[in-house]
Length: 77
Image (cartoon, rainbow, N blue to C red; front, side):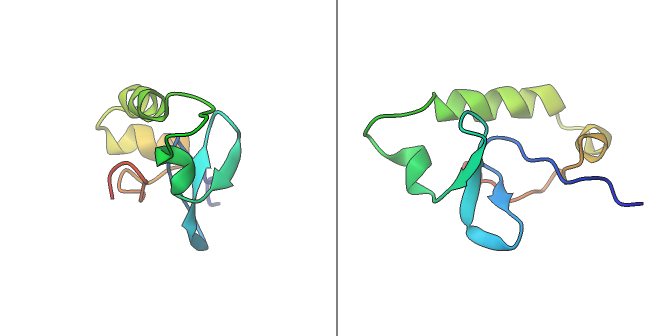
């Protein structure tokens, strides 16, 4: 049985590499959502950093969460 895929802030959408997950909005957006200088929904870097710290560098933590440790992300691509 395959574990359900979960996304952290900035993760690239499977099946559409032009869209990335925003955990503040609970939706997928293009890259400009994360780097525009206009009105922001959150501090994107802070949300990403918090999610990475929560999961740590353990492949097991990522796997248990339902995410590959090497998942493409708008902040580490």
